[in-house]
Amino acid sequence: MNKKQKAKSIISLLKTEYPEVKCALIYSEPHELLIATRLSAQCTDKRVNMVTPDMFRRYPTIKDFAEADISDIEEYIKSCGLYKTKAKDISEMCRMLHEEYNDIVPDTIDELTKLPGVGRKTANLICGDLYGKPAYVCDTHVIRLTNRLGLAEGKDAFGVEKQLVKIIPADESLNFCHRLVWHGRLVCNARKPECDRCCLSELCPTHNSKG
Image 1 (cartoon, helix red, strand yellow):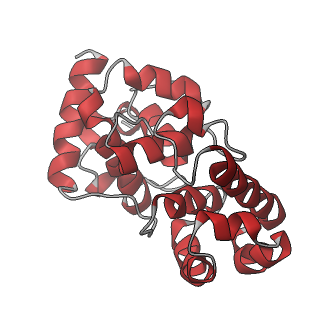
Image 2 (cartoon, rainbow, N blue to C red):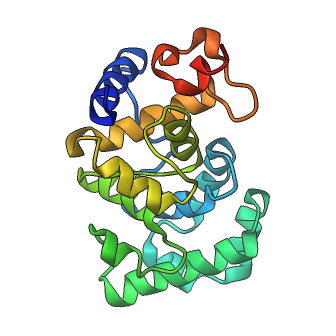
């Protein structure tokens, strides 16, 4: 079984296990997903979802964030970690969106990654979740699981993304990544994967190597 064939089988099994999936971050406006994703770096989605509602009520528009005092943004996001850097990025990205993009979140990776604090993972998520485009969102769960499953090698997000593009159909890409994230959280965790209840165990070389 080559990687494309294995990927097809894994996609099918994950669809059965997680028929309905979506991004775990809660948002109602495009810029809110952009901000929430920036906050999720080295922070749990659960924590981000606890922090953002009050902040989004205080600053409902991109313009509001662009004009906000950075220290005020910091107060809202302190519990998310790296809050000074994140607050600066949020302020600067919203200023750029307001001044250069007419308050519209771009729909391409090239444009999105021009924004302060936005890397390919965030850009892919925005393109996929907001605009329905192919999206290979390579966060820590996706990197870990694709390595364990033998679909990709290495810990570099862009390197893994390029490998997945070759074997995961574009129309399956976003939900494949979302399903891997849920599977990584619920079953195949980093320290102690629960192989005995994993729907992918028969296809997993990491599990099978345990003998």
